[in-house]
Length: 257
Image 1: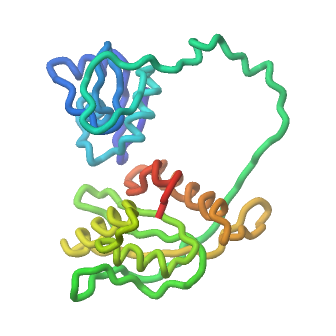
Image 2: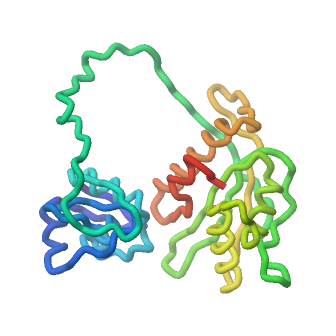
Image 3: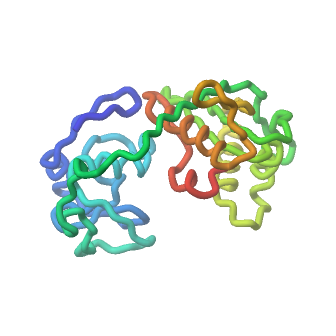
């Protein structure tokens, strides 16, 4: 299996992965594990050992995808899960073979999404050290925070959607006192304040008009419409070399920002 990470090409095989793990012990599993020869390993530890890449260069979801492509079983466990015999996984072979050629096509879906990012302005910090956002409309849409390129040359982005862009910015600003358990707000608040406080800059862009199909406008008052555009933008950014996206896929299925 071949893949590219930040412009660098890697090639992995099951045998190579097993060889690179030799002489190492599995670390504590915090969420996702991969089962290799009867032992469970944290997925990011395995990819880091197999490629020599630092863990900050890739995400857990990428690790799971690569390891699954190599045929290794993937699972999840609670923080502090211990290594041991893996649970019985639900494989297609357990239910008998499946032949998709016997299925009859009943419908076809072809979705195309198009929109432009419009520069709203920089994100700065006020005298209290809280994020100060540029003026944003009280309208539904998408937003993107561009953290620029780091010393490693990697461009860092965060992409989100909201039913009211100005209110979403206030949520990020007040995340330290927010008691509504909005973990995404607190996480991005820390990313913003830490980056700007250390001398970095952040550019905010928005999109309040999205087209699909033959140029028909999407009604962004609908969460499903905003999610469609958001997911498309995140997926496109994730597929480009030299870009790291701060979005976590589990957030896109819940509180995305």
